[in-house]
Length: 208
Image 1 (spheres, one colour):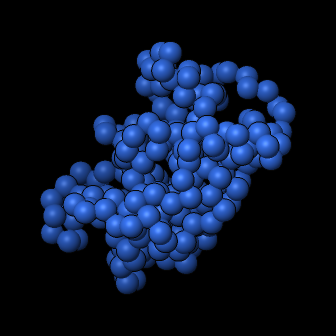
Image 2 (tube, one colour):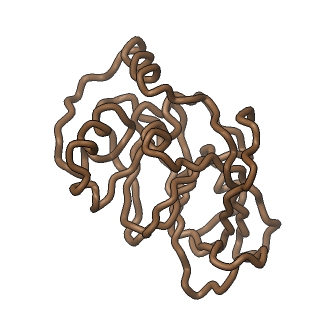
């Protein structure tokens, strides 16, 4: 699942290429009509093969959530961080499940207003939109500059159409963390809850 932002207009030809091969929201943001035909299984398989989207990637970060205003036990989620254009283009496309202790993180530096869609994602997801909170001097783990707060949580259903709705909050986003559907509710996660995000020096194996 890719994203759209206000700076997408400046990406020129490269952005247009990624639009047609990736799972992104640029079609909506840029007003481009991609048609209404539903792709068949063979088309989905060809698209998946063309951009080589993995079932699982390396764990390169982790998010520690402090739900219910910090009153609940912290919850650690292992993150595949989508750093490269290829990783961002794939997102969680074509994956048939996402384990409870696992998620995908999309960093935005600098923070921006973004939107996501669910094209070619076969399972529903909880999208946790995360904002940098300047009132937080350091993270709960004592590491400066790694603590954030939840801006909004949106549960998005799968979409197999060529045109899909987009999801995003009002306000600038520093991270988006995608979790299995219902995981945010299980954790008791709510708007304003804090979390720490860190990158791992040594990636963990791909297997869940």
